[in-house]
Image 1 (cartoon, rainbow, N blue to C red):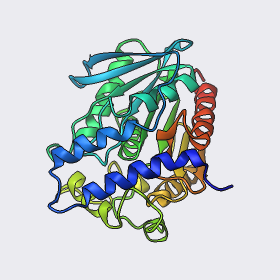
Image 2 (cartoon, helix red, strand yellow):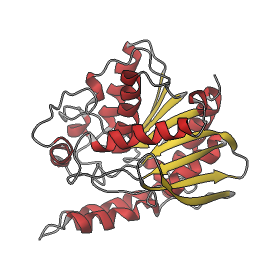
Image 3 (cartoon, rainbow, N blue to C red):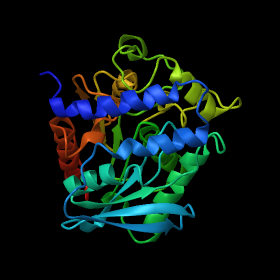
Length: 305
């Protein structure tokens, strides 16, 4: 089935972002961050969802609660925004998280975390773990928690739960990764096959973001930075969804295969002709709505088990 007409909204936005970021002279990182705040634009405002801006005591940083009208108040999705590790915020991902929370009939907490290059690995990972521990300290049961994220946030969602396992902390009911960026060696086949199809990321950009995230002291094979080298034994179920035309398609596919090798449940969706984090079109494009609905059903089936 060809991509819907509505899905072109994201292609247009991404083409504009890529054109500006590749302009000469190069944009400052502050200007790039400001530009990427526009990522929220394609998503519609989810109905019957309210928001509360708070400061997360676990990280001492801003966060946004997403509160669907019919949410089970005992169930929470900890949401980690994308942005290649150097950009993005709770505000840029509020609507996406709101749609996900509504589909799951749960609350969602979208946290701010420390960004690169000022704070390289493992700062974002540590902030995610701290936020999860704060939720536990507030009385939320691990079996009613999920961790989710997109792009770099999909990496942090995965790695934070791996870290929780290392620390012996009760694990969440499920993990959700939208278009996860996990391969710090950029070996994925789709880096080549989708080079002329990805509307957002020019070929080779992943090498730059890897350098920003890892610096010069961390191996690209470090399992908490590159989960393709991690041991997923004993991990909770995963739902992974990627766009068929994105550079990172192979990251999500290989991650699902790695998880399944450990006999852990891993649902994988490759959405034909879709772009990176096509989920941003929630409420506008049928492809995004189908995936969000499926993930919501997945989470509802895992909470409380």
